[in-house]
Amino acid sequence: MNFIETRGNDGQHPQKVSFSQAILSPISSFGGIYSPESLPVLGESFLNKHLSSNYKTLARGVLVAFEIDIDPTTIDQALALYDEFDDPANPVPVVKVKDDLYVSELYHGPTRAFKDMALQPFGIVLSSIAQKRNENYLILAATSGDTGPAALETFKNRANVRVACMYPVGGTSDVQRLQMVTEDAENLKVIGVKGDFDDTQNALKRLLASESFNQKLKEKNISLSAANSVNFGRIIFQTIYHIHSYLELVRQNAISMGEKVYLNVPSGNFGNALGGYYAMKMGLPVEKILIASNNNNILTQFIKTGAYDLRTLAVIPTTSPAMDILKSSNIERILFDLFGEARTRELMKQLDSKKCYQLTDTELAQIQAIFAADYCNDDEGKAYIKKTFAKGYLMDPHTATCFKAYETCRDKPLKTIVYSTAEWTKFSPVIANALTGEMDTHDIDALKSIAQEAHIKIPAMINELFNKEICQKSIIEKDAIEDEILSFL
Ligand SMILES: *Cc1c(COP(=O)(O)O)cnc(C)c1O
Image (cartoon, rainbow, N blue to C red; front, top):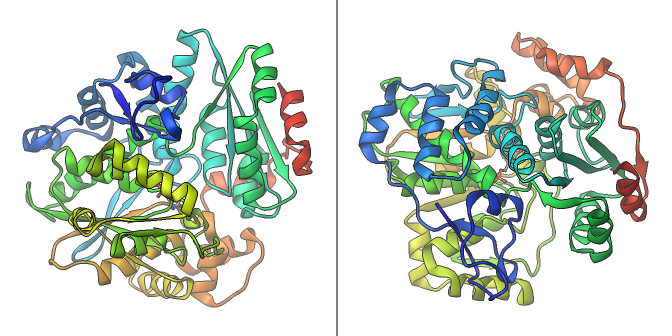
């Protein structure tokens, strides 16, 4: 399968690229991104065939249908990483929480957040492409918490790839910071930056665009790449768990084959939702995809009104920080898929120059035929955590945002799959506060009190973090980032 450009071709870039090329350089003409030229049709025969498959076999089936230029051995090595999840036989448990609400738990990987679902196999794929081409890559990452640990974990000790990961000092939770600064590998560099997440992200963008920096890397025979959520190498692995979750509902006799369901996704950069959209287009029986936001509710406004309007907005910090996003990058692939390259280029140009675009009524109707959305503020989220815990299910604040959309967005009594994107251990102070009212500033206190409250154990990999040696000690001013990275290389 080939990949084409969301904003059309500028005559400088190739008209089409392979999957591996789209992974190595995700940005295309006019600042667009690569999207699949066509999607495989899976249909009911595929679903029936995989009803008795395990996760890896289903995943292999989906990847084969995409006809990507990655050899089967590499694919097998990549998928083998799901064996490292809590239960190798079922890396993504789907749990019944209410009669018509099932939670698909995407956080059972090494860093306890759903970024592992895609980044774990992606690391193997990228490293293998780099080795085959005899090239060396530097992955630059700026993180507010979940992407950083998952990117470090996947590229740790992988050949031909190095990672420099920047986080804002004081801007992540204790667990997230410890997951990064205790990573001990020659090819990893973690840099605490004095400033907020925007400062680190702006520094990253400057470096990616800097000719002198790129030139210095070239002298060291290194190319730059990014593992961010527009990379199709991540998206492809995010179609699989939607199909898996549907099949789980059939296996659990919650639905019969062919019956439609709602997918309900806590959204930030729209990677998770886009995976659901592609799965639906490939033939998964989905009624609608329910998009949950927090107080940064631009996606809700967009889906309700067709206006993507950044003009008066600034990011609001919330208790679901992985969704504190205003420029949701993967929306562009939806625009492209529904309205084509010329219209996408026009809309994205308006977003750049006027910080705003408005869909036509016809376009809005097309969006609303697939998506519905609502947002959930922090207090509502805490109330859902508390209420759901009282019924026996513990969830994190990102997952909780879905419960609002579940209540307000469905117009048919169909089963709903809520995607849980983080384990309780990742955002413990918020959860402890929701359950008992306590105001812990340190994760370790909150973790202990939740464990006691819920009669569960703190998972070993989280507990161990607090005793591990801190080996990544760099804490620097933001104007020193470039030198810090160059001296690492
Ligand atoms: C990244 C992330 C999200 C948002 O996912 P997108 O694919 O960017 O929409 C939601 N919850 C958690 C915990 C995350 O880490």
